[in-house]
Image (cartoon, rainbow, N blue to C red; front, side):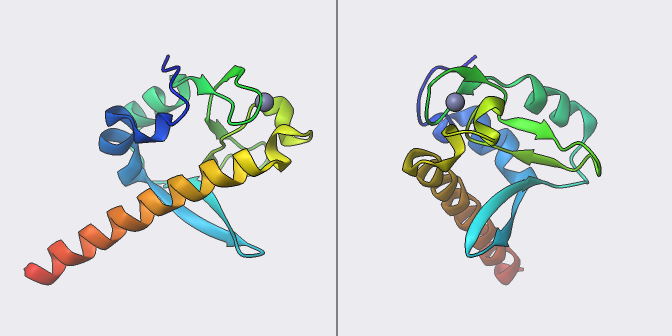
Length: 117
Ligand SMILES: [Zn+2]
């Protein structure tokens, strides 16, 4: 597992995972979703990826599947934090915003590539 706090800046994340992420917005806040077209081998690596919770630093899996519709997403805090304090703090919002910016930059670079064709 990676222990670095800014794990979303790791090569593995930006090179292998980032292209499969997109954002939805709820009340102006981004949520990081995993595309349904993500290949199963990529998802297998995503779901075994372990990083520290953005708030309590406990080791956790950021890529998870929702109960119900089984959609997949990327969370920056541990599962305990989903209903508790970890997901509520500024550190969670900051980490999500940082990933959101990486997605934005990636989408912008794709747009530029298409523009050149
Ligand atoms: Zn936590």
